[in-house]
Length: 209
Length: 354
Image 1 (cartoon, helix red, strand yellow):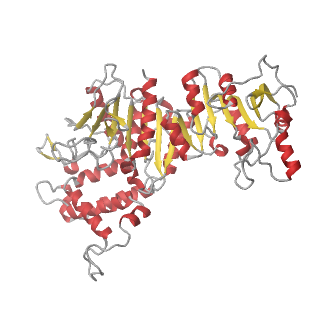
Image 2 (tube, helix red, strand yellow):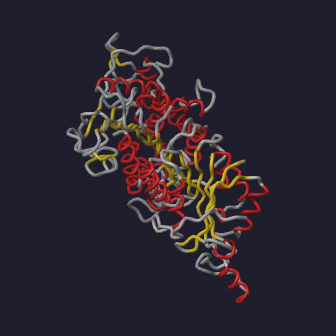
Image 3 (cartoon, rainbow over the protein chains, first blue to last red):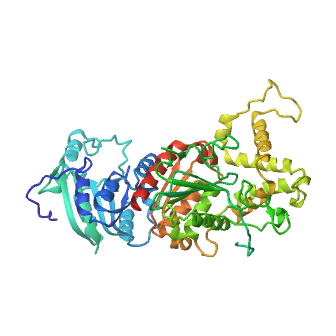
């Protein structure tokens, strides 16, 4: 596994308070068609629509979040990502975004396949379960890790699939997908080496080979 | 008309609020539900009553009349100013009664399009309505795709289910079983008031929910401590239904009830298209679809069918099921959340046409 060539500055600005959003905002080309899965209140979609002229759509399971997203003028529908993409035609979008939600889906691989079917490119951002802080808390405390990245008690966590950067790389190899870009972040800094140990969040731009 | 008949001349009753801008791109057509009329907002000069969606249409409201030019007309076949079975047939000088042609939702929309033409509006920013109004909004998007920028179908369906047809049929049978109906020829005589009132009572039950009825009436007795042990009104709910039934008789024509419910039952957007997705293939409109959790007359699955079909065409569609205890009536009474949704949706749609 090789990290992307790093820019001179390893500092990543925040967009709407999130570094992964800043990277997604940078990746997405203007005037494209974007579907954001688990889009929450549609903040990222609104930003993409206003700043990049993107035709922005979203899916979100929480009714109250969908309400707030529609109230800000974003086209979001209430639905479950695990089932929700079946109706879309192939290659309907330029980008399909799944930001910090892959670990919450019931069938992550199926979701990934569906995303690759409906989108020409897929942007996946996920918290890295291989981060040293997770390893350390498990080693020292012996309990389900509760860290800045995974702040939940085991019994009320929305996260049901725990994956690391290495796991995701292995999946990409297994599925023969092409990674166009990969970004590893710790706080607001890019991680230059040992991403599986040091990255808190990973962002991948992938497409079917 | 869909049944092959020609109807002329036709009167259309309509009201407008706000002003059409210079570009003529701020017009919103509101479509009323089964028993509604053109008086959607403001206080009526004649009756002193507020419009049926007055909480949604007006300055600063969901359909902001400071910003948009809002139009609402009474449907074809109605009895509130637009030509219907109670209107005089110029050929005979008598009311049409049952000689009025059987109408469809598409016929209603065809007449509305003539109105929009006569107002000089090329493109409607939005067509919006709940229940039968939502069906008309969908029909607009399919019949006149070039004339509609966006549509807001609320608490509706693309086709009536067996259950919906069944309730309408009970209403129609109640009217036609009333001897005063007299094969529809009751104008100038005693109208089939009992039949129409029973029809309306059934209708009202379908508009509420188990929860809302329990909350509103429970088993409370009406003006008495104990059962009367007779068949007068005992329960509050009986009193309410009787009141609603008798009040309806004063403002609605029984034959209009027959014609309009039939139009709803015939409604099937897939007609002539094979599938819903094919029907929607012509439209480029933006959609906001809304359903209500306790609405068992037009359940959420019917709205979700609309959304799914639009997705297969990759149409721009927003959808949410709002939580409400009010049943089908929610679209008329639960306005706070609808207001946020519609304001945001309309606002961003309006920006896109600038």
